[in-house]
Image 1 (cartoon, helix red, strand yellow):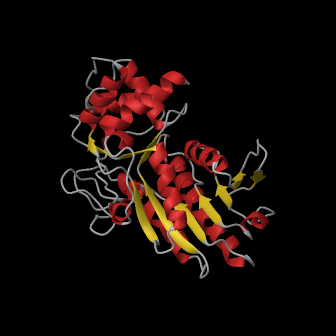
Image 2: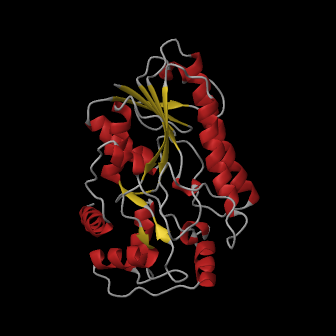
Length: 313
């Protein structure tokens, strides 16, 4: 197949590109800074010569969007919103105008769309969309609004011959440098990977190999449309998540951090405490209903595999 990956130079794009290349597909990456054979320039906002790659392709996967690992300033939040909504809009326009449109458009979204909660997990049918929770910082609602408008831009696109799937992805865990697992493991190795603000908030995650396998399933299964949670079926509290990671590395100590300590740490790392403190208890209802079997359903098995791969790199 010819597969076009828009915004494919980040961590998730690199994971997919490696796997799809290895499977023998023709992979074209749309990026602002072409650096490799197969890369095509685009700005994520306007049509251009890149639309010719979409016309006649089999699959389009749009991952474009400013990284959420940043300070949530007004400017950064605006760029996070615009980069996601604009890229989804312009991809939709390219598909609409194509003489031979792709048969499926996978649009990145996020598990952050769901409400902050500790009790019942969110699946696609019964999950509660966030933005109205009490007792959480008001600006957290902006992240939910970004996710809603991101998905809405895909839904609004007139693509009658192209199936549309929104990937409500949890954190993708891989051994790649600079990814979220790399940062968490770095904290654990320093003995800083203890409970944050008590550690009761849930962490939803997915192993990189299961992420790729889920994407491949969604490409193949013509009956699946709409939002799909890409998350392992075993979310767990942050304190247990980090304890398992420390154990996999062999670090016996994990110093706890209060909320204000987390705020200082997030400031030093130029990121935001929402990524640490929001409870994301998300489960993959539709994937499981489709018969998908996770290779790494539980963190107790995923963490040691990822650590082994880090040690080999």
